[in-house]
Amino acid sequence: MGFPGTWMTESESVVYRVIPKCACSTIGQIMYYSDQGRFFDGDIHDSTTGLHKWSQPDSQQPITERVTGQNTYTFTCVRNPYTRILSSFFDKICGIQRNGNRYRGNLVPNLARKYGVEVEGEFDQIKSFRRFLLFARDTIKYRRPMDPDIHWSAVAGHASTLILNGGRYNKIIATEKFQEGMKEVMSCIPTHHHLDIDSMPRFNESEGHGPKRAHPVEDYFDDLSMHLVYEIYKRDFVLFKYDPQDPSRKEPVGEIDLDEVHAKLGD
Image (cartoon, rainbow, N blue to C red; front, side, top):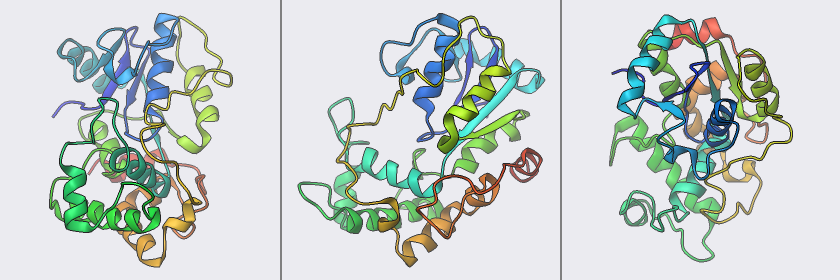
């Protein structure tokens, strides 16, 4: 299986397990800058040089050696399941992607037909999101009407692949405490070029794809929606210390226990 979704600086100073919808664009740009002294001109997901990626065949051997050797600082970034699934909805379902098309071609028309999800005009965001949530649950729990998409499949599932194949995390940071977490990461690795995390730009590549969220996060989740989110993302809530009872409470409520994460995701 290898290490899908794993990036590493060309200098091999740090390894990062990409988790979609968890500040991955900004993290990739930080890694790129630390070696190259400049940000990548464009979406960092499109880069083919300047950063090792598992999707690039020539990068697979150095990534494998560094991850399995467990002698290179390795980290990932997680996010509150409530805000992550909501962000996925507005970006991937409601939004037009940078290629000018809807995400995954006929996905949105199928959602409209099978689940009653509306994304055109002045649609009811809360109603459509809750119907999308049923679809996301079906893909994750039952793998129908399709396999789960990487943007709404559980964070724990993404994070586990590195552990299961012989890697170990030195740090797991939270999107909600991004600056604090990335400062700690950068203080632990050698860098060719210093970057001020506080003043650097943010690279939200999905921003502007879809309509703006019209309501506070908690308004999108009634009792049933909260039950569905917990059913789907129980491991994310438990391992990464988010509050399943309060969608408005975005930040983690405790410190991540790395030993617990490795024990439970390494089975």
